[in-house]
Amino acid sequence: MRLAATLSGAAFVALLAVTAPEHARAAEAPALEPYQMVRCLQLVQDRIAAGDQASLPMQRRLLEMTDENMRAASPDAFKEPKNFRALLIYAMSGGNPLTIEQVVSRLSLEEADQALAQGIIDYLRGKPKSTVDALASVDPLTQISELGAFLALVKGSVSIAQEPEQAMKLFDQARLLSPGTLVEEAALRRSVALAPRLEDGARFLRSSTQYVRYYLRSPYASQFADAFVAGIVALHASISLDALGEITAMMDAEQERVIYLRVARRAAIDGLTELSAFAAAKAERGRDGQRNDADPRTQLYSGLSSVTSGSADDMLGKLSGIDRDKLSKGDRALLDAVEAVASELTSALPASPNAKPKPVDIEDLPPAPIDIATPAADPMVPDAAETPAPETRPVTTIQEPAVVAAPSLKPRIVPLTAAAQPASAEAPPEAEDPKITEARRTLEAIDELLGGSPK
Image 1 (spheres, rainbow, N blue to C red):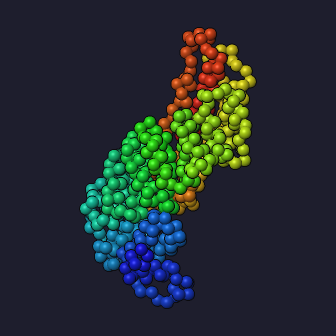
Image 2: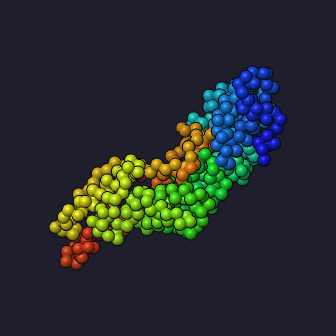
């Protein structure tokens, strides 16, 4: 359906004002009510959520026009409930906090409306505790659906740290009140990021499926990719890899490959050798017989995941064939560190099988830079109000928005294998086969090396 068909007459005039040439705007345009400007802004943002990245410049212009409209409107205009609600929705749609504060300061509001406005201003100012207090008595389900959806998203965002279960319920409410919108897109992203914290594998897979099916073309999908990769690593023991494959099959071949590359890297660094080997093999295999075994990242991550299957000499030989120039700075640091460990292990065996190789110092390794699409600023949540997003980066042609940030997810650090644990001091040296000893030392050294990488 064309956008014009979905707009009211006045809102369509606002859209024409955005897209018309400068000289055409010189003519006096009919004055629009605040709620009409905001309605037009929402429709454009929903198109963006569905993948229409060409609407991003239009969104920026509409935000500017709406800001001017809100500043110019008289206090009497906001006595109309739909205009006051529009002011609050504008605030949560990427509006200017200064404008919101100035307009609210000129209004005589009922106590409930004053608390509502103050809670949103606190949210925009990055004050989650004050936001929680101000909005504590607000039930999103009792509000007009458009406003209620935003309030559920905001309340869920500030509840993540202290009440993650309640936050998930609020994200569900946001989706219920505003299906097919940027609000639902943001709520789904938050749900994907939050599910691992709740150790809810089923919820993680369900929300990921819904996001990929409806919003993978969103300019904000890199946030989803971050949460998706982090969640796979965190929940690998409780989710079905077959179900994971069904989700990635809905992506295009390149997006799927990059997801598996990122999982392989993260799993290798966290010592999850089986998951790393699985993901590296999936990335290498590709689709329709189009193998990706020439990708140096695949070679590096598969090399890390197979340290138990060969000697340090074998691993060093495999790593030396990687084209360093095609690796990111972080992956070159990782390659250097692992080659240093392998080289040290091949130089000479220590006198005792319990002796540890000299640890290698490397800087914290940044996530592998992988594209998904140029990131866009999430229009619904100011930087100051966002909680840290899970560490990891995109899928391959996507990126993220401003409605509410995902919760922080700290991947669990797991030893490479049981063999990576220090050998008992009482174990008799003669009980160790030299090959087993070397394999154990390799694992132990790399585990020590990688255990201090990205938290």
